[in-house]
Image 1 (cartoon, rainbow, N blue to C red):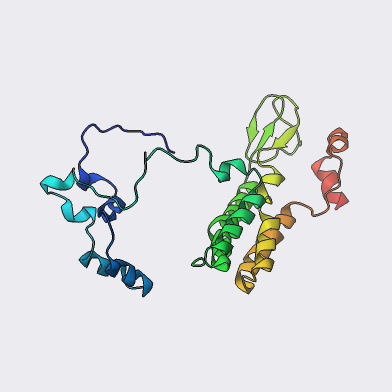
Image 2: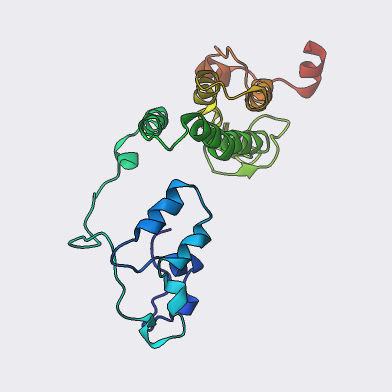
Amino acid sequence: MDAPLVMTTVIDPSEVDDECHNMEIESKLPLEFYELGKSYRDAKESLKYIMIMKSRLGKPDQYTNFNFSIYTRGIEDGPLKTAYDKIKSMMDKVKEQLRLAGKIKCVDSKDVAERLLKHHFIPDLAGNLRAYSTQTVRCSKCGMKYRRIPLKGVCVKCQGNLILTVHEGNVNKYLEAAFKLTKEYELGTFVGQQIRLIEKGLHSLIPVNNNINEDKDRDKKNMSLKSFMTSQ
């Protein structure tokens, strides 16, 4: 997603992302700016004391004389590998994020944990559960895909074994972490119920204590539909 799709040789400042227009271009920020921030005033009130890029659009100086308050030797300087990439386990990444949130005075760790669940874990769990329940199956021998498992239980083309295209581990990978965050940060009944509903849906599709030996199960003789119905 970071690869450029279009290269523009001439940049028109009015055509770039609107967020850039809110960039301040002052060499130093006045005391009044900090006082407004201290009193939690509306950000628009600070425009009386600082200049932003938007005020220069359509003027000759929209391309030049951009000041800055913090000097750097090069905008390309910085870490070549982020901590998010270095830390492999998702739970370890969550722990580090919340540990950092706990060190920052203006950040509410409970709010961070709740946002993490609502905007990442819960949608991901629900989406993976939906994908698991509506997945196709694939023949391990010829690659033929089926929207529904044939009544024979094997590939009708080559009689090969059928395997799932969405694995159990991809569905419940965040479930334990979600429960742990809910309990540790006391995120309330609503969030807890959402996760429990997903867990209930997951367990309705995947047995909790699934100790069946898959290799032995594959060697079992195929059962006819009539035999299956009478055995229930």
